[in-house]
Length: 344
Ligand SMILES: [Zn+2]
Image (cartoon, rainbow, N blue to C red):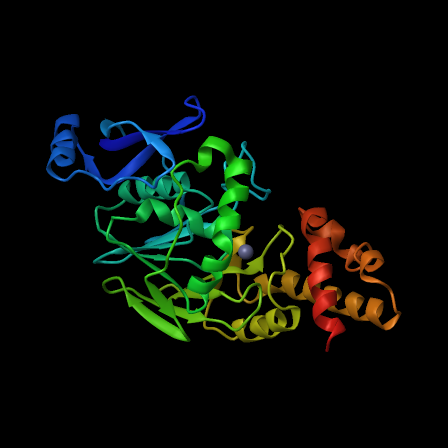
């Protein structure tokens, strides 16, 4: 198989380059790929890059997915912070194949991840990708969506996602560009096409996905996806496993969302980090315990008149043995929890 590639480089330093996939020109032979490129030239990539001319090359590396139920594929992201080693592959990703089309759920930190998802899908089906569903605003879930621009896929998110991305994504882009280096090349801003106020049903052809938008919890943009046929629920970062949960919304809100989430008719879930498949509702236990300890310790610090600067070292310290990346995220969680509960 062949595919269309554009070599893109940083304008400032002509040596930092990467080959970006242009989805949709896949063909069995180089000649057929060349003819498709000549017939329909691709849209230009975002400004700020020095692109070569598009060329057809043998298909590059796909992202690694496991089929966890018929037609449901899951990629396990690394439990890590973004760096040049993992190139931003640190969140779970799924795709679901119906009889008419495919839906992608979350997209990784950069355009290259989206390209590698596309290749993984094309290894299984030629059906179009109709929907790219973003479970929330965090950069490790949204930026791969830029690879799907021009493919006809529509980007789906929570009703508050447009506003949240408008406020935050430029900062996210700058910090990821610095952390990931050339791996971030070609990554563009993401603008959802379809927003979900409460719920939305997407039919992929004899396969219905039930999307639900949640009140503020992990973030203010949390969306879940339930595959009716298999009762597998994609929770995004409403559920973490092994990776310490990161609180960027409301502690009390998250706890109440988890209580309601546990009543959904799911049998297994795919969390945003860890897993990648957990039994349900057993899979919520670690999260509930951590958030409970975070609340209890934060209230105790506030009641004892402990100042935030001192309290962040004590709050939820007993949870450290249970989680990875504890030091990276727990002080922030304690700060968010303290600020929230202080004003109750
Ligand atoms: Zn997140």
